Figure 1 (cartoon, rainbow, N blue to C red):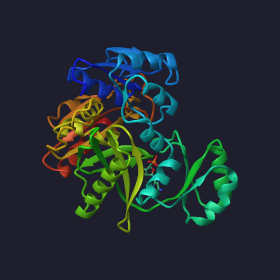
Figure 2 (cartoon, rainbow, N blue to C red):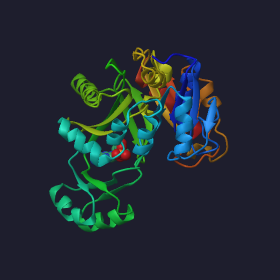
Figure 3 (cartoon, rainbow, N blue to C red):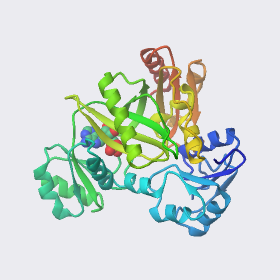
Length: 375
Ligand code: AMP
């Protein structure tokens, strides 16, 4: 067990790294952040910020020498950087889990091997794969880059071979998956924490609402039937067990109009749709990240209150600093801002959690706040 007083490292200094850092510091650990951005949200508050690229071996060695364990806030850390770090200290989650999650082709193929349902898809390595793939699937389709896509970026809707070829070129002719668009009833996610010896705590299922491909709202508990809830939870646990996973795992699902549950994607880290855990659960997803990387058992994932999480994107800064009183005057609302210097449209700048006696009551109050803030 790695106990308070030890130093922990995190690759990536965005908002997820920042909230990890806050949790670790409040538990008595020292934190070192590695991130190339001099203004990284986590770098500001960590004990030490190593400002370097994720591929800089000298910087990685410095991090490895300082830390008892290292984690990451994103999947796209180069695999060989993770393997390099494994020489110096514990790296959790391990390189294998990241390898699966950082590439949609590998991820979906792995899910298929496990027998877990996804939207029908075909891997596309080069343009000659496209015509057959379009024939095999039922339009409308989505062409998604296999790696580095997030928040709906790197995705194009296509309906025929001509559009598919144009889309493949627009995405840089990189490996992609072509998948069927499914008719969505809702989207949900499951977040769990699994310790090095397999103890697992699972949070309640949350419903996620997206706007323009970006998460807008998470509602917990999700208003889905018990069968779907159990299936989603069971599948997430199976994935974690199959990877012998250590850390926080987030699994996003589609609930289709005809009642199917399909796995959309997995994230080997705390997730935007788990931000509600910070104010509404016995243990936050970031404390779970600290606990699991330190060889401690996961904390209680119990939900204390219905909650609605709402993202705050850069768009609402257009008229200057938003009128935060709209949130701060509400006793049920908890504001979290990430300390980013520049507010760009679509950029995640913060979020707030609204706790109430029911999700409907929370949604009602959130609607009032959104109206005042103009989004
Ligand atoms: P992703 O980056 O794959 O999570 O996609 C971002 C969002 O686009 C999802 O949360 C869905 O709202 C939507 N989306 C992605 N793939 C599909 C699909 N196959 N069918 C319907 N909607 C999708």
